[in-house]
Image 1 (cartoon, rainbow, N blue to C red):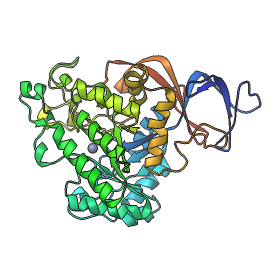
Image 2: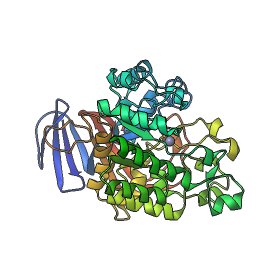
Image 3: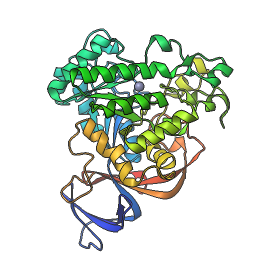
Image 4: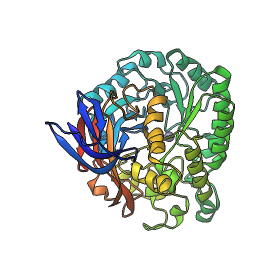
Length: 429
Ligand SMILES: [Zn+2]
């Protein structure tokens, strides 16, 4: 197959020949028989890799399945996703992670790499069978109780020590539970005006600071999920300046949206579409997160794709579930927040949405440079398109996007997984 007229990381137009799932040739004016895909001048990126996806299967197939979640991922330009462990049953044994891994092999429109729970049942009391999950067919390397914080310092220390044996990483959802009891939104001026219980920045920052110190103390790898505050950025900058093995991610929504939307938005006040954990923060936090992603203090953009059925979101604010879908809009939001603002070029996007997440997750075959001999995991993206966000068109089973009605830049034109198209002309194959 030849993919004609694409611009690798936004460079000069070339053609890419794909054979046996690998990139066989990159040059202008390639010819030959076989299938031809016209790239139309699209930017080509290495297939995107998400470090933080909730696929909901097993247990909440009404919200998402491995099939629909990976279809959503493919439409967003992803060729691999890490499936979070807070399923039902929880992915805290070799058996459950192998089940998710097998579902990915059978029904996946991208590769599915299971994340293992840190503690049994996400209950924060006993370490899960980390070694058995690492040794399983799913070869788990990322462990997380995401949705909940591993708040016990002794358990967190043990987990960090344990994963060293197989080069794993503990991905922490940093949220001090006592400081965030019944929290509804960011603690600040807006929560004060609205009379909603606040989720203070310090509840995130205190856990990140502690965990950076623990990771340094035991010489292990820590990854911080969905960083949301300017103070967290300062702590990460300090930890990295020490040379500690700490990485971090930010979500697209924390790069674009603020807590003011809870009070005043195109869809009214108190609309739970904006309810998410960690909460949307202030404009100053958004600015600090953008700068940190640009300068490498934050390594990765991860979606925290969190599908919820309508009945769990379209209810009163206090009762609504927390979370947003994100796979199908991530690249467009990153273009709006980072590329169109001049903070990142396409090489920078490729590093933060493909290479770095694959490296942190120790995921072979993904996140490699676009060069001859590499697996043909490719995303074709047209940054000049303007796409109104239509939730009804999502491949995801859920519709809880905060971008409904907005027009975002760019469009995923095609996605290739080991040379096989999963999306062509914006549509699932
Ligand atoms: Zn989380």
